[in-house]
Image (tube, rainbow, N blue to C red):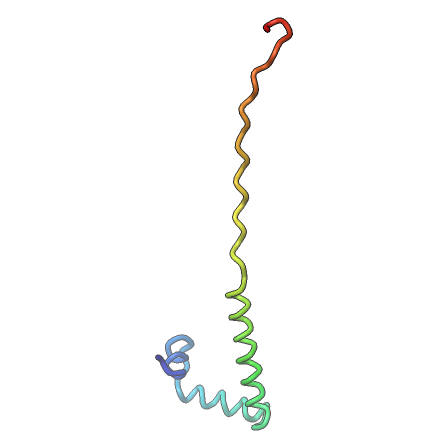
Length: 80
């Protein structure tokens, strides 16, 4: 399992220094008491999104075309 730092370094090009700077900025903007609530809300949102994307039904397959009926022979009055 990769660590969070490795994930961000590989995907977004962020190293540990950049992650610390981002964390400090978030701490200044939201305060120490709001950060856990913010993280919890973000986690719940991601959980709901994943659940909704898994629950989504695959596209319905189109109904098969009805088989063509064979035409019945035409009856004429004088052919009995």
